[in-house]
Amino acid sequence: MSDELKNVLPPVIDLSTKVLIVGSMPGKQSLEKQQYYGNPRNHFWAIIGEILETTIPDNYEQRLQLLKSNHIGLWDTIASCERKGSLDAAIRNEKPNDFQMLFEHYPNIELILFNGAKAFDVFKRHIGFEVLAKRAYQKMPSTSPIPGKNIKSFEEKLKDWQVMCPYLPNIK
Image (cartoon, rainbow, N blue to C red):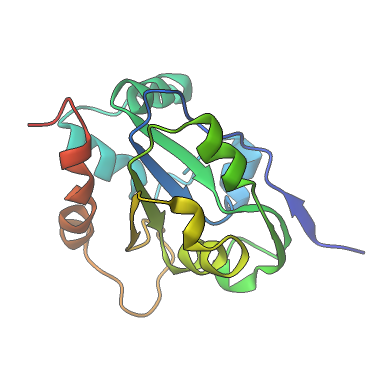
């Protein structure tokens, strides 16, 4: 019996996207809900709310529209993998998403932020940074609620994630 999971969440992106936030593979709750960052304990949506200085809507489609209207996109490095549970450390035999194609179709992306070490490491190993051409990129502290080593406070994470602000036309 295989523990293969397929990432069924499509990219959240359009031609106005300037910042692409790249995760590894959605956790169990996110896959069940069919939502990026579906675990209510994950700091992702709270960080976005602080950066955009707005209240995050409860409705998921409105959340995605908020991202798009602020030129922020989402995707994951992993198209499929084997994993028991939701931990990135349990991911095995990952197959990457096609970022070459994504960047060809969405040439206005200027900054790629990797949400955590696993997303960064999978991208580096399977795709390579050459595909980014002249785009800026950075490994960010994970917004995951899972305790681990080198965990930062919400305030520390927020400060790090504000690196995206210069790329967002609606942020002063």
